[in-house]
Length: 351
Ligand code: TXA
Ligand code: MG
Image (cartoon, rainbow, N blue to C red; front, side, top):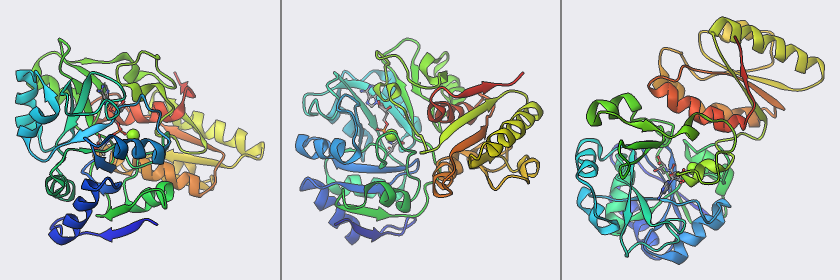
C-alpha cells in the first residue's frame, strides 16, 4: 500500500514531513515534489534502501542516482576534493536545479552511484523537498519518480500512475514549477561539461564560468554511446507509450509537414496526436487529439507542461505523436534534449 500525504507546498506542515523523514531513515521509499520534477527518495547511505529504488523503477543498476542534501556544507559529507568552482556554483545556484558531479566520499555506497567513483549532488529549492531532506538528517538519493524510460512526473497523480503500490509514501505538493529535471554539470572537466541541460541554461552557466561545453549526446536522439558520461543517456528516456516523431526546421514548413504526415497516418487508420504550441494549434483543427505545450514565447511554460502533455497523449490512446520542435537556445536546448530522447531516433528535419 502506498500512503498519500497532502502537504502545503508553500508552508509545509512540519509534522507530516517529520513522519515521512522518519520513514526515510527507516529505509522506506518516499516520493516528494522538487522544483523540477517529483523524486523517489531513499536514504542515500543505506544500500538496501537504494536498491529498492532501482527495483521499484525498473532502473538499470549502472544508472547512478542524484544525492539531495539540505545544506551546502553537506557537500563535504558525500563528496571529496570538491573543487572551488563547485563551491562557487553551489553558493550561487543552491538551493536550486543544478546537479554537480563530484568525486564521491567513502560514506556513499557504490550502489547509489551506479558503481562509479563520482557522485551527483544537488540541494533542492522546493520547500517540501528541502524540509524533508533536512528532517531526514541523511542525504536523500532521489531519481525522478517514474518507471524507468517514462516521462518524469510533474504531479503526484503521475507518480501514482507509475508507482502506486510499489513505494511506501507519496507526498502530494501539487504541480512542480520547472517541469524538467535539473541541469547536470561535470565540474571535474576543463571547461565544465553539461551532461544534461536543465532549467539553469548553458547561457547562464557560461556567464558565470566562461566557456562551458555541452556533451555531444545532449543533441542526439535515441540511444547514446555506451560510454556516455551521464549513464542515463544510454537508455530510451522521457518517452510516452506512443511513438513520438519530432519535426525540426522552419516553423511554417514544420506545420505543413506535420499536417501532411498526420493526414497520411489518419488515412491508414492510425490514431494521431499532435503536440504543438499555442500559436500553431489553429493549423491542426481537423485532427482529433491536439495538445499545446503553451506559447513558443514562454519556454518556461512549455517546459512546465512538457511531460504532462506526453502523458495526456497516452491517456488519449494515440498510436503516434507528431511533435513540433523548438530552437536549441536557452531553455529550448533543454526541451529539445527531452523531446529528442523521447523520439528515440524518429526525428524529421524539414528544410
Ligand atoms: O531534477 C532532478 O535532477 C530530479 C529531481 C528529483 O531532483 N532528479 C533526476 O534524477 O532527474 P534522475 O536519476 O532521473 O536523473 C539523474 C541523471 C541521470 O541521467 C544520471 O545518469 C545522471 O544524472 N547521473 C547521476 N549520477 C551521475 C554521475 N555520477 N556521473 C554522471 N552522471 C550521473
Ligand atoms: Mg529520470
